[in-house]
Every structure is written in C-alpha cells, then in structure tokens.
Length: 403
Image 1 (cartoon, helix red, strand yellow):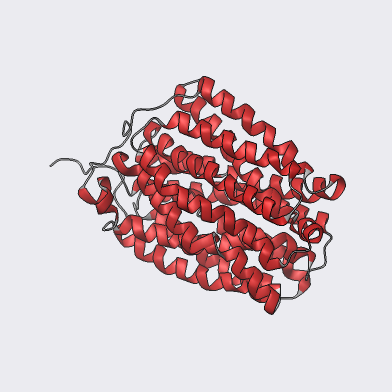
Image 2 (cartoon, rainbow, N blue to C red):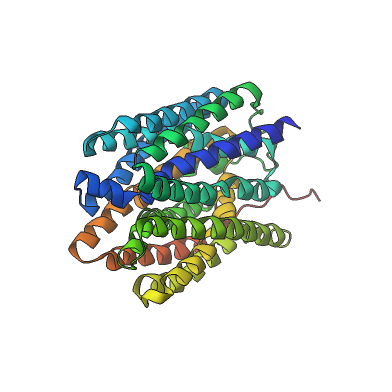
C-alpha cells in the first residue's frame, strides 16, 4: 500500500477510537447520575469540562502543528486520551470524573487538528471531499459503538467497565501509527496559490469562506453536541425506553444514518463540484435546513414518532459531515492550515458544544428535556444563514487556466 493509504487508514482507526471514547459517557449518563446522585446540569457539565479544555488547548496545538512534525504530536495525543480513559476505573466521585474527562480534551485537541492537515497534504483540493467524507464517517460509527458500549456494558458490568475495555485499542493503534505512518511534505498537494487571506494568520480574520464555514459549523455543533449528549437520556425519559434500549436506539440511528448520510452527502457534493465550486457549502446548507422539521417532530411530536423522527433528522444532519469539513480545509493554505483548524475548533466549541450539554441540562432541570433540546432548533436555523452566506465566497478548486 502507498504511504498515503497506510497513513489514512491508521488515522481513520484513531478517529474511530477517539469517538468511541467520547460517546461512552452519554451512553450511560443515567447510570453515572444515579451513582453520584448528580443533577442533569452536573452531568452536562462533564462534557462542558472536556470541551473547555479541548478549546483552550487548540490554539497551542495548532501553532505547534504549523511549525513541527505532526506525527509525534498525533501519537502523544492518542496516548494521552487513552491513558486518561484507562484511569476511569479508579474514579469514585463526581469531581474526579470531571477532572478525568477534562484531561481527555487535551489529547483530542491534538489529533483532531493534525489529522485533516496531514490528509490535505496527501490529497489535492478536488479529492479532499471524498477522502475526508470517509475519514469523518468514523464519527457516527465511533459514536454508536460508544453509546452501545456505555449502555449495554455499563448496565451489565457497571459504568466503569466500558472505559477500561475501550482504552487499550487506542494505545495499540498509536504504536502502529508510530511504526508505519508517514509525514507528508506541507502543501505538497495544494493546487491553489496562497493569498494573504488564505496563508497568513491575520488573513484568516478577513477570509469570509473560512469564517462563514466556521460559524456555520459552530451553530451546528451546538445542536449536534447537545443532542448527542442527551438523546439516550431523552429516549429513556420522557420517551420511556430502558437505559440499555435507549443506548441501542441512539447507537443504531447514529451508525446507520452516519454511514449512509455521510456517504450520500459526500457523493452528492463530489458530483456537484464538477459543475459548481460552491457545492460544499450548498450541500451543507440543505443538510441542516432539512433537519429542522424532523427535529421539531422529534422533540415536540407524539411519543410514537420519536424514534422514526430521530432516524430522519440524523440522516439529513450527517449529509454535511464531509463537505463542510472539506470547505474549512480548502478555504486556507498549507502554511497556516493547522492554525486555521485550531481556530475553527476553538470557535465551534466555544459557541457550540462546550456549553450546550450544560445549557440543555439547566433548561431541562427547570422545565423538561423536550424544551432543553428544543434550544438546538434555533442554532440550526442560524447555521443555515451562515452556510448560505458562505456559498458566495467559496474558493475555486484550482487556479484558472492561463489565457
């Protein structure tokens, strides 16, 4: 296999394990809440703590990624989050669990920034949507496995067991990455010239293609982070499923819709790019717009329609996964790509899922979980506005032919 393919497959495996680790907690929130006698707001704060550290670590890791080799940084991040997950077996109070979950954010802030930048150096602008759509398909698969591991294994063996079992593969893949992955030359596959707005840090603040995609993703991330954190608990109460059944349904909808939705969205965008360089933004816009009516039906409709509405909403939501992340990568040039991705991560988590699980939990404590999750519909609408605006500034896929 080529060095690009080997590195891609190992990054794909790390991305899968990254999201398994992240979604074990939502899969067994009810079990942990009962054990620690915590409120919903406190349980939401666990995810807030992780993303807060993740958000603060991102600028530093982005700076490092544009100046040093990324391979050892990726390995270090994978080892850190795997060890933090392993230590959960010795957690016996809420604040120790909070600290442990926050530390995971440091490890994730390295991998999530460096992996897309490395892949962009292997593949040119026109091919990145295809590659990144496959890469990001690991998100729903990992999330589903995390839900199921947390709900089913946690119900049978206690909520600490899934963390212990799922930590070890991360260490193994980190070792394989160190042995077989390659570090590509920065910018080796870029076909567009680097303008000031695309290739300098100050220019990022004047780059409308980057900013619109980033803030569109931020509003979307508020909704996705909040929904993914609370949907198993929502299916348990008020919908009425058992903890294990709720985690299975959440996992099934995430993995089925995630794989199919990500594949379909990537395919549509790839074909549309042949005739319209704005396709990455437009597919993302329609993805979010079509999610909203099914979200209304899920949160406020009849109980019997909750599960079908969840499957429909998640399918449309996942259509944007590859195109929107590709739009962000393509909006900047290699010299500042890691910094741009870190800036993107800071913004999407600060305005997105760092606080949304806790905000939803706080609203649910004062009203109910239906109204708490209903907050996400507002941010989905705002995401549509940013993405439609961003389509006006989408960069071409290559330099125009000389005349």
